[in-house]
Length: 392
Ligand SMILES: Cc1ncc(COP(=O)(O)O)c(C=O)c1O
Image 1 (cartoon, protein in one colour):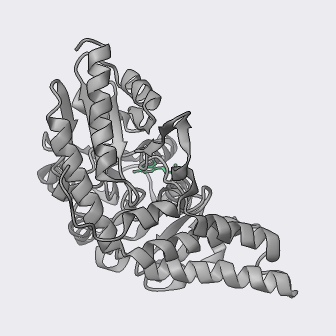
Image 2: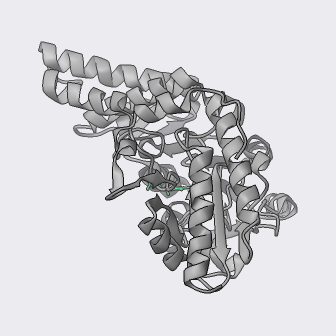
């Protein structure tokens, strides 16, 4: 590894994440490369949650006592932080949910249930996460609409000719697509796809789970009608997430969709996560991730028998999915774990994609703002060790 100019002080960032200071096994440091599944949390987020429970725990929007007012203020301030972070037009369009899956289900069970019927078409893609397939399949079974899938080309991008043809030839009511693939890393042309969908009168839902943690996102520029993401993948708490709606279509936002006592600590923690990411700068985080992903792809491609999936680093998120000839992905993950390296193995809740790639499983290393080039080197060394052990 050569010396590099880094866009921010990664060692200072790492020092903020308590879990990164611990050993994975005795004498073996933790190398966390499973960020696409869930990210680690800095002390600033942990402290915000701790502070809420210790100093001003109370229900929101109800009480007129001081604690309730403080909790409501912090919870609503977090909503404004999120609004600014993704450039939503209005804080009323920012709905708290518990994560991407809940956001998509909420759209399916409200707008979808009211508007989709037999004879309509919903367009998904072959690279979708199950979270963006199952809710539509279940509703289609009940309502009788048709689901069509945009295929994935060999270079890991979507077949836009088929997308154009579907919009032209079918009565498409909704396009529901991921912004960034959790396996291939492909960054889909969302603004362009939304425009084409709108041109034929269809609405657009975007699964932003792998985008908001990693790229500067401007929901107004993308012009989707629904946009959802999870807090836990962006250094925030589990059980936090956001659905943004195009407010022009709805009354009484956001509370109409936030019944009951919400996840107050989680919302406040998400606000702290947004503060942390903003203080570094999403453009700088993207710069670092692009560099580390390019380095990882280069180094991985040196390993004999290794196949990489998805586009090049400049067109993809911080994900490297691969298979290694002669070793099952689960064995790779287990052997890496023994070296202190956490990666994911399996179909990553994207079975249609793995069917189309014609493989049962991949191993996936996914990076975030705190990962280092030295950690990529350790991954490569561990893969060579695994190959030796399996004599492949
Ligand atoms: C692209 C994508 N969509 C949806 C999800 C589901 O997110 P959650 O489990 O936070 O609801 C994930 C999680 O892995 C994902 O990667």
